[in-house]
Length: 318
Image 1 (cartoon, helix red, strand yellow):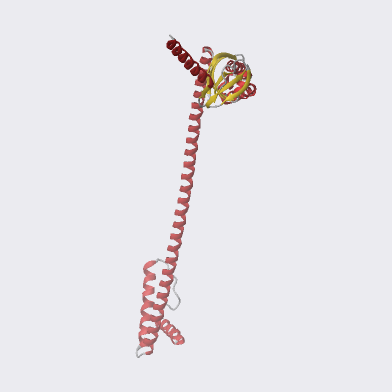
Image 2 (cartoon, one colour):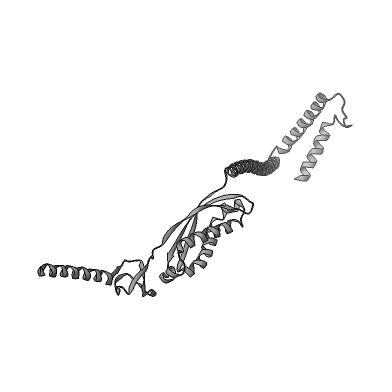
Protein backbone atom coordinates (compact mmCIF):
# COMPACT_ATOMS: atom_id res chain seq x y z
CA UNK A 1 0.00 0.00 0.00
CA UNK A 2 2.73 2.39 0.96
CA UNK A 3 4.72 1.48 -2.15
CA UNK A 4 1.79 2.23 -4.45
CA UNK A 5 1.25 5.59 -2.77
CA UNK A 6 4.89 6.44 -3.12
CA UNK A 7 4.78 5.50 -6.79
CA UNK A 8 1.78 7.75 -7.38
CA UNK A 9 3.56 10.55 -5.59
CA UNK A 10 6.60 10.13 -7.81
CA UNK A 11 4.46 10.12 -10.93
CA UNK A 12 2.55 13.20 -9.80
CA UNK A 13 5.77 14.97 -8.95
CA UNK A 14 7.21 14.11 -12.35
CA UNK A 15 4.12 15.45 -14.05
CA UNK A 16 4.35 18.65 -12.04
CA UNK A 17 8.00 19.01 -12.97
CA UNK A 18 7.23 18.50 -16.63
CA UNK A 19 4.41 21.03 -16.48
CA UNK A 20 6.65 23.46 -14.61
CA UNK A 21 9.43 23.05 -17.16
CA UNK A 22 6.99 23.45 -20.07
CA UNK A 23 5.65 26.59 -18.47
CA UNK A 24 9.11 27.90 -17.73
CA UNK A 25 11.02 27.21 -20.95
CA UNK A 26 9.75 28.71 -24.18
CA UNK A 27 11.32 28.34 -27.62
CA UNK A 28 10.54 31.30 -29.85
CA UNK A 29 10.86 30.45 -33.59
CA UNK A 30 12.83 32.57 -36.02
CA UNK A 31 10.98 35.59 -37.52
CA UNK A 32 8.50 35.62 -34.66
CA UNK A 33 8.05 37.87 -31.67
CA UNK A 34 6.10 36.93 -28.52
CA UNK A 35 4.72 39.52 -26.16
CA UNK A 36 5.08 38.58 -22.47
CA UNK A 37 2.77 39.93 -19.82
CA UNK A 38 3.60 39.76 -16.19
CA UNK A 39 0.65 39.84 -13.83
CA UNK A 40 -1.55 41.20 -16.63
CA UNK A 41 0.80 44.00 -17.69
CA UNK A 42 3.18 44.23 -20.64
CA UNK A 43 6.62 43.12 -19.59
CA UNK A 44 8.78 42.60 -22.70
CA UNK A 45 9.03 41.02 -26.15
CA UNK A 46 10.57 37.56 -26.41
CA UNK A 47 12.97 37.29 -29.32
CA UNK A 48 13.76 34.06 -31.21
CA UNK A 49 15.54 31.39 -29.15
CA UNK A 50 15.14 29.67 -25.78
CA UNK A 51 13.45 31.93 -23.24
CA UNK A 52 12.52 31.46 -19.53
CA UNK A 53 9.05 32.42 -18.34
CA UNK A 54 7.96 32.46 -14.71
CA UNK A 55 5.00 30.07 -14.45
CA UNK A 56 1.68 31.41 -13.24
CA UNK A 57 3.14 34.94 -13.19
CA UNK A 58 4.19 35.46 -16.82
CA UNK A 59 2.18 34.51 -19.84
CA UNK A 60 2.63 34.85 -23.60
CA UNK A 61 -0.22 37.13 -24.55
CA UNK A 62 0.46 37.68 -28.27
CA UNK A 63 2.46 35.95 -30.98
CA UNK A 64 3.39 37.95 -34.06
CA UNK A 65 4.82 36.84 -37.40
CA UNK A 66 7.55 39.26 -38.51
CA UNK A 67 7.58 38.07 -42.13
CA UNK A 68 6.07 40.05 -44.99
CA UNK A 69 2.40 39.12 -45.07
CA UNK A 70 0.16 39.36 -48.18
CA UNK A 71 -3.39 40.42 -47.41
CA UNK A 72 -6.14 39.99 -49.97
CA UNK A 73 -8.34 43.08 -49.89
CA UNK A 74 -11.95 42.10 -50.70
CA UNK A 75 -13.38 43.28 -53.99
CA UNK A 76 -15.54 46.41 -53.80
CA UNK A 77 -17.48 48.82 -56.00
CA UNK A 78 -15.94 52.29 -56.42
CA UNK A 79 -17.48 55.33 -58.09
CA UNK A 80 -15.23 57.32 -60.42
CA UNK A 81 -15.29 61.07 -60.92
CA UNK A 82 -17.51 60.70 -63.99
CA UNK A 83 -20.05 58.63 -62.00
CA UNK A 84 -19.06 55.24 -63.36
CA UNK A 85 -19.14 52.12 -61.19
CA UNK A 86 -15.87 50.24 -61.10
CA UNK A 87 -15.22 46.96 -59.34
CA UNK A 88 -11.73 46.95 -57.83
CA UNK A 89 -9.81 43.99 -56.45
CA UNK A 90 -6.41 44.39 -54.81
CA UNK A 91 -3.76 42.83 -52.59
CA UNK A 92 -1.81 44.45 -49.76
CA UNK A 93 1.63 43.57 -48.37
CA UNK A 94 2.53 44.55 -44.79
CA UNK A 95 4.97 43.61 -42.03
CA UNK A 96 4.84 43.85 -38.23
CA UNK A 97 7.64 46.16 -37.11
CA UNK A 98 6.62 46.87 -33.46
CA UNK A 99 5.09 43.85 -31.66
CA UNK A 100 4.02 45.93 -28.67
CA UNK A 101 2.02 48.40 -30.77
CA UNK A 102 0.66 45.57 -32.87
CA UNK A 103 -0.62 43.97 -29.65
CA UNK A 104 -2.06 47.01 -27.91
CA UNK A 105 -2.45 49.64 -30.67
CA UNK A 106 -5.53 48.05 -32.22
CA UNK A 107 -7.80 45.20 -31.31
CA UNK A 108 -7.34 43.70 -34.79
CA UNK A 109 -4.78 45.44 -36.96
CA UNK A 110 -5.46 43.13 -39.91
CA UNK A 111 -9.12 44.12 -40.01
CA UNK A 112 -8.16 47.77 -39.51
CA UNK A 113 -5.72 47.69 -42.42
CA UNK A 114 -8.26 45.97 -44.65
CA UNK A 115 -10.99 48.50 -43.92
CA UNK A 116 -8.65 51.44 -44.28
CA UNK A 117 -7.36 50.09 -47.63
CA UNK A 118 -10.91 49.88 -48.96
CA UNK A 119 -11.92 53.37 -47.85
CA UNK A 120 -8.66 54.89 -49.14
CA UNK A 121 -9.07 53.15 -52.48
CA UNK A 122 -12.63 54.47 -52.85
CA UNK A 123 -11.41 57.98 -52.06
CA UNK A 124 -8.53 57.85 -54.56
CA UNK A 125 -10.64 56.39 -57.40
CA UNK A 126 -13.38 58.95 -56.73
CA UNK A 127 -10.93 61.69 -57.76
CA UNK A 128 -10.20 60.13 -61.15
CA UNK A 129 -12.16 59.63 -64.34
CA UNK A 130 -12.70 56.14 -65.71
CA UNK A 131 -10.02 56.37 -68.40
CA UNK A 132 -7.47 57.70 -65.94
CA UNK A 133 -7.97 54.77 -63.55
CA UNK A 134 -6.54 52.40 -66.15
CA UNK A 135 -3.67 54.74 -67.01
CA UNK A 136 -2.66 55.70 -63.46
CA UNK A 137 -2.52 52.39 -61.61
CA UNK A 138 0.90 53.19 -60.23
CA UNK A 139 -0.31 56.50 -58.83
CA UNK A 140 -3.32 54.80 -57.23
CA UNK A 141 -1.14 52.14 -55.62
CA UNK A 142 1.27 54.78 -54.34
CA UNK A 143 -1.53 56.92 -52.88
CA UNK A 144 -3.05 53.94 -51.04
CA UNK A 145 0.31 52.92 -49.59
CA UNK A 146 1.08 56.44 -48.34
CA UNK A 147 -2.30 56.77 -46.65
CA UNK A 148 -2.18 53.31 -45.07
CA UNK A 149 1.42 53.59 -43.91
CA UNK A 150 0.70 56.84 -42.07
CA UNK A 151 -2.19 55.29 -40.14
CA UNK A 152 -0.66 51.83 -39.66
CA UNK A 153 2.42 53.26 -37.94
CA UNK A 154 0.28 53.60 -34.79
CA UNK A 155 -0.45 49.91 -34.96
CA UNK A 156 3.19 48.82 -35.23
CA UNK A 157 2.69 47.76 -38.86
CA UNK A 158 4.60 48.85 -41.96
CA UNK A 159 2.60 48.83 -45.20
CA UNK A 160 5.05 47.91 -47.95
CA UNK A 161 3.00 48.04 -51.15
CA UNK A 162 -0.45 47.76 -52.61
CA UNK A 163 -1.26 46.28 -56.00
CA UNK A 164 -4.53 46.49 -57.92
CA UNK A 165 -5.25 43.03 -59.27
CA UNK A 166 -8.23 43.88 -61.42
CA UNK A 167 -10.36 46.82 -62.52
CA UNK A 168 -13.71 45.73 -63.93
CA UNK A 169 -16.20 48.29 -65.28
CA UNK A 170 -19.81 47.36 -66.15
CA UNK A 171 -20.50 45.39 -69.32
CA UNK A 172 -22.00 48.32 -71.22
CA UNK A 173 -18.91 50.39 -70.39
CA UNK A 174 -16.73 47.55 -71.58
CA UNK A 175 -18.59 47.43 -74.90
CA UNK A 176 -18.25 51.19 -75.30
CA UNK A 177 -14.55 51.04 -74.49
CA UNK A 178 -14.10 48.21 -76.97
CA UNK A 179 -15.78 50.26 -79.69
CA UNK A 180 -13.62 53.24 -78.79
CA UNK A 181 -10.47 51.13 -78.93
CA UNK A 182 -11.55 49.69 -82.31
CA UNK A 183 -12.23 53.18 -83.68
CA UNK A 184 -8.90 54.41 -82.36
CA UNK A 185 -7.07 51.51 -84.00
CA UNK A 186 -8.84 52.13 -87.30
CA UNK A 187 -7.93 55.80 -87.02
CA UNK A 188 -4.29 54.92 -86.40
CA UNK A 189 -4.36 52.50 -89.34
CA UNK A 190 -5.75 55.20 -91.65
CA UNK A 191 -3.19 57.70 -90.40
CA UNK A 192 -0.39 55.20 -90.91
CA UNK A 193 -1.67 54.42 -94.41
CA UNK A 194 -1.90 58.12 -95.32
CA UNK A 195 1.59 58.68 -93.93
CA UNK A 196 2.81 55.81 -96.06
CA UNK A 197 1.18 57.25 -99.21
CA UNK A 198 2.59 60.67 -98.35
CA UNK A 199 6.07 59.26 -97.88
CA UNK A 200 5.73 57.31 -101.12
CA UNK A 201 4.81 60.47 -103.03
CA UNK A 202 7.68 62.32 -101.41
CA UNK A 203 10.07 59.54 -102.41
CA UNK A 204 8.75 59.53 -105.99
CA UNK A 205 9.07 63.32 -106.25
CA UNK A 206 12.57 63.16 -104.82
CA UNK A 207 13.48 60.40 -107.27
CA UNK A 208 12.13 62.36 -110.23
CA UNK A 209 13.96 65.48 -109.09
CA UNK A 210 17.20 63.54 -108.69
CA UNK A 211 16.69 61.97 -112.11
CA UNK A 212 16.06 65.40 -113.68
CA UNK A 213 19.14 66.82 -111.98
CA UNK A 214 21.27 63.91 -113.14
CA UNK A 215 19.84 64.19 -116.67
CA UNK A 216 20.55 67.93 -116.83
CA UNK A 217 24.03 67.31 -115.50
CA UNK A 218 24.52 64.60 -118.10
CA UNK A 219 23.23 66.87 -120.90
CA UNK A 220 25.46 69.68 -119.71
CA UNK A 221 28.46 67.36 -119.57
CA UNK A 222 27.63 66.05 -123.06
CA UNK A 223 27.36 69.63 -124.38
CA UNK A 224 30.68 70.46 -122.72
CA UNK A 225 32.27 67.38 -124.24
CA UNK A 226 30.77 68.21 -127.65
CA UNK A 227 31.99 71.81 -127.48
CA UNK A 228 35.39 70.61 -126.37
CA UNK A 229 35.43 68.19 -129.31
CA UNK A 230 34.36 70.91 -131.76
CA UNK A 231 36.97 73.24 -130.29
CA UNK A 232 39.66 70.62 -130.67
CA UNK A 233 38.48 69.83 -134.20
CA UNK A 234 38.59 73.51 -135.13
CA UNK A 235 42.06 73.77 -133.62
CA UNK A 236 43.13 70.72 -135.58
CA UNK A 237 41.62 72.11 -138.83
CA UNK A 238 43.29 75.48 -138.29
CA UNK A 239 46.55 73.77 -137.50
CA UNK A 240 46.22 71.65 -140.67
CA UNK A 241 45.30 74.64 -142.81
CA UNK A 242 48.21 76.65 -141.42
CA UNK A 243 50.52 73.73 -142.04
CA UNK A 244 49.16 73.39 -145.59
CA UNK A 245 49.66 77.13 -146.23
CA UNK A 246 53.23 76.86 -144.96
CA UNK A 247 53.88 73.86 -147.19
CA UNK A 248 52.35 75.62 -150.25
CA UNK A 249 54.38 78.75 -149.56
CA UNK A 250 57.47 76.70 -149.09
CA UNK A 251 56.83 74.81 -152.32
CA UNK A 252 56.11 78.06 -154.15
CA UNK A 253 59.32 79.57 -152.82
CA UNK A 254 61.27 76.54 -153.90
CA UNK A 255 59.61 76.67 -157.35
CA UNK A 256 60.40 80.34 -157.73
CA UNK A 257 63.94 79.71 -156.61
CA UNK A 258 64.26 76.87 -159.11
CA UNK A 259 62.81 79.03 -161.88
CA UNK A 260 65.22 81.80 -161.00
CA UNK A 261 68.16 79.46 -161.16
CA UNK A 262 66.95 78.05 -164.47
CA UNK A 263 66.69 81.55 -165.97
CA UNK A 264 70.34 82.24 -165.15
CA UNK A 265 71.49 79.18 -167.06
CA UNK A 266 72.02 79.14 -170.81
CA UNK A 267 68.80 79.26 -172.86
CA UNK A 268 66.76 80.15 -169.77
CA UNK A 269 65.49 83.46 -171.16
CA UNK A 270 64.35 81.83 -174.35
CA UNK A 271 62.51 79.14 -172.35
CA UNK A 272 60.75 81.82 -170.34
CA UNK A 273 59.76 83.66 -173.54
CA UNK A 274 58.32 80.48 -174.94
CA UNK A 275 56.43 79.66 -171.71
CA UNK A 276 54.92 83.14 -171.46
CA UNK A 277 53.81 83.01 -175.08
CA UNK A 278 52.17 79.60 -174.48
CA UNK A 279 50.35 80.81 -171.40
CA UNK A 280 49.16 83.91 -173.23
CA UNK A 281 47.76 81.90 -176.09
CA UNK A 282 46.12 79.34 -173.72
CA UNK A 283 44.51 82.09 -171.71
CA UNK A 284 42.86 83.70 -174.78
CA UNK A 285 41.79 80.24 -175.91
CA UNK A 286 39.96 79.58 -172.62
CA UNK A 287 38.28 83.00 -172.75
CA UNK A 288 36.93 82.17 -176.22
CA UNK A 289 35.52 78.85 -174.96
CA UNK A 290 33.92 79.98 -171.70
CA UNK A 291 31.96 83.09 -172.84
CA UNK A 292 30.20 84.66 -175.78
CA UNK A 293 31.27 88.20 -174.89
CA UNK A 294 34.79 89.24 -173.95
CA UNK A 295 36.84 92.38 -173.68
CA UNK A 296 40.26 92.30 -175.38
CA UNK A 297 43.13 94.74 -175.17
CA UNK A 298 44.02 96.80 -178.19
CA UNK A 299 47.32 94.93 -178.83
CA UNK A 300 45.86 91.47 -178.53
CA UNK A 301 47.71 90.30 -181.63
CA UNK A 302 51.04 91.68 -180.49
CA UNK A 303 52.33 88.53 -178.84
CA UNK A 304 55.92 89.66 -179.12
CA UNK A 305 55.09 92.85 -177.23
CA UNK A 306 53.43 90.96 -174.44
CA UNK A 307 56.39 88.60 -174.18
CA UNK A 308 58.79 91.51 -174.15
CA UNK A 309 56.84 93.22 -171.35
CA UNK A 310 56.86 89.99 -169.28
CA UNK A 311 60.56 89.57 -169.81
CA UNK A 312 61.23 93.13 -168.63
CA UNK A 313 59.39 92.28 -165.43
CA UNK A 314 61.51 89.14 -165.02
CA UNK A 315 64.70 91.06 -165.57
CA UNK A 316 63.65 93.76 -163.10
CA UNK A 317 62.92 91.20 -160.44
CA UNK A 318 66.19 89.54 -161.11
